[in-house]
Image (cartoon, rainbow, N blue to C red; front, side, top):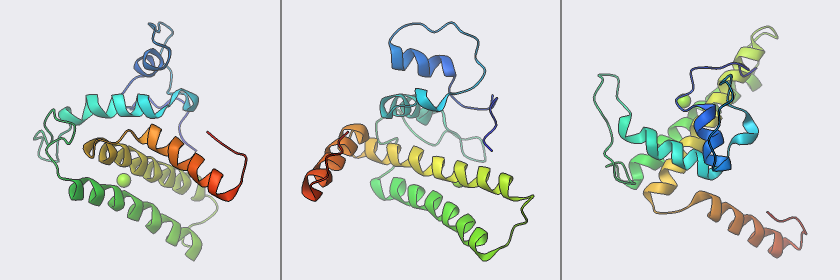
Length: 153
Ligand SMILES: [Mg+2]
């Protein structure tokens, strides 16, 4: 299970709530509620955190530009690397490597790897000058139209 009181997040509930509502948020910070996440709030937090991100030696990795000083193949490799980490966990789950008692912790690891994919995917889109929220709505609705399915974002 994802900890309900995870205080290790790099961005606060307050920042996310202020981004989403456009007004100051003064309630105590206990955790990041899933329903406060939007593509815009993820992108805003990514843009704020990216220039502060350090490697294992403590060196700043990215600059202040939208691409952070990486080319698109570096961002896409990072995204796929995280997807590979998720796939490796899934492989081990399906292979039966874990006991029932281990599964909650394993599912938490899988959730964090999938979150890594989403975070990097937003960074990749930003580096390419693409608003992932708009692109997702447009593509979802395009496919619904093509399929004749009346489900739209
Ligand atoms: Mg990871």
